[in-house]
Each structure stands twice: as C-alpha cells, then as structure tokens.
Image (cartoon, rainbow, N blue to C red; front, side):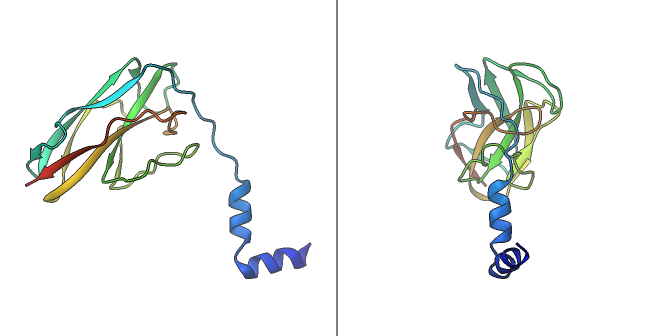
Length: 144
C-alpha cells in the first residue's frame, strides 16, 4: 500500500484521486417558478465607473447568509464570469464573485472603463448554488 501511495504521489495523482472522492456539500433544491433578474442597469446600458446595480427576485425571499429559512437565499453578483460556479461548492468570493450575504438587494460597483458582463446567482444560507442554479440573464454594460 505504501508503494502504491508513493507511486501515486510521484506521478501527482494523489491529489486528483483524493479530490475526486471529496464529498460535495448539501445542495438546496430550487423551488419552481423563481425569477432572478437585474433591475438596473439594463442590458447594453452605459454607465460611469461607479454605478448602482439593483437586484430582483420573484417567488422567493431574501435572507442573510447563515439564516435557515425555507424559500430564501441571498444574492451573488458575477462580474465578467463566463462559467457558473460548480454545483455543490460554495460560490467563490473574489473580485469577480461578489457576495451580498447581508441580504442586500443593491450594490454600488466601481469598474474600469470597458465592456463588462453582470449576472446574479442566488445562493443558499451556506453560499451554495441551488439545484438547478437560480441565475439571472447575463447582461452587458459599457463603462465609460
């Protein structure tokens, strides 16, 4: 057994084997007929380098992260993100994945000039995406 582990370690496969066996976190089933959307700015809008994004949600309530209450979640704003975060894993927290775990329904962004995409994703009390993911349409904005 030690020889097998040593051989795997030398080939770099131990991490891959262990990661494949890592359990996914519990996922909250998404209710039906839910709409997540960006109220403003509109798709194709132009904005200054600092602007406000208003979040919309229909069919569910907004609750802060950590609060366990049926049919609630909280917003995450994906900025210039092409692929949704993986199912069963917390939504990352970085410059492209903005968390609003306090239950916020709007935010002021500061972005560099250029074309950017914005998309909302609703997370459960543990920042895990719902199954299936509850996301808004991805919009494009032009920052001056």
